[in-house]
Amino acid sequence: MSEAIDVASLSKTFGGQAALSDVSFSVPEGAFACLVGPSGCGKTTLLRILAGLETPSSGQVLLNGSDATRLNPASRSIGVVFQSYALFPNLTAAQNIAFGLHGKDWPRSNKQARVDEVLALVGLSGLAKRKPVQLSGGQQQRVALARALAPRPRFLLLDEPLSALDPHVRGALRAELKDIQRRTGVTTVMVTHDQEEALALADLVVVLRAGRLEQAGSPRHLLEQPATPFVADFVANMNIIEARAESGERISIGATVIAGVVHGLAPGAALSVAAAQGNTRLTDAALPAACPARVRAVEFAGRQLRVIARLEAGGTLIRAHAPLGSPVASGDVIGVAFDPQSLRVYAGAP
Ligand SMILES: Nc1ncnc2c1ncn2[C@@H]1O[C@H](COP(=O)(O)OP(=O)(O)O)[C@@H](O)[C@H]1O
Ligand SMILES: [Mg+2]
Image (cartoon, rainbow, N blue to C red):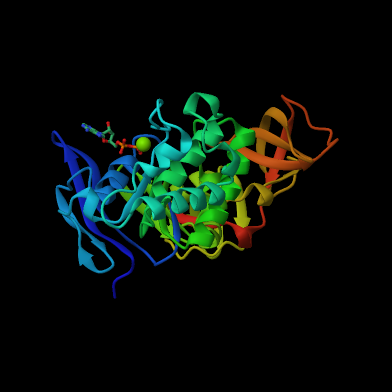
């Protein structure tokens, strides 16, 4: 069955170097998808292929079930917003928006009404006559969004549209972007390197790493069931710890044996264990199920402390929460303990 966007076995090489390798996922009609991953993992390349600005080396893009792989950008019914505002500096906000409304579908009378409508949609009704230099970064990005949405595209593609904005403006515009997307119902794909942004906005998070798909799913699915240590780390912010399988439901981290961990792997097998920060507790180093660690830093994190410590076994840095006022300081030797049932276990060393 086809969805609004189907990406099928997409690969792209630049001069022999793979930027995308066999990437497949689907975006349902009206959904907000985020492509997330570290810098250089192929996000922009994938978005440009969806936009028709780049041709894949192999694989297909289906839009509403039809092969669009070779379709030119103008025939795809897409609106695009990039990180830099890319507005015409000599045109007003309204003129910038009207720029995309041409052809027989947009006679002069309809054009003006549509410009007013999208200006209101992005909350800029009073600023129609301003030039880009007279607008803040956030307002310029609203104009870019209005321009992209004005022709009523079926698809909206956004490449890091918020990342040039300062954090305060970014948070506000993020919430509004979500609201505008919901109200228009336009099927959206947004690129971000910020996993928090992806989790806040997306119905579907698509995680890329070095040109490959790591996992695609709802924010909740990725947070609760990260398929790989990379997703557990990058998306769910979990601690990834080197461990070894023991017989029965036991694992060892260095000399510490932890019981009650279901793994199904042969004793001696190398493991990666993912522990949420909320499931990484500080205890007495002398307790049998505690992993000894040395505190490297204590930071304020909202209404609690974030403790960064180095495990004696393997030297892994872990992050844990502690209540404000906990008597923990840099250099202390502490124990780190986990609820065994909430650990996620992956075959292979980190
Ligand atoms: N036009 C191009 N020519 C050559 N290499 C490119 C080109 N575009 C992207 N790349 C390479 O492809 C990889 C993925 O780039 P990109 O899609 O921009 O990553 P991201 O947006 O995730 O940071 C990088 O290694 C990048 O250097
Ligand atoms: Mg990019």
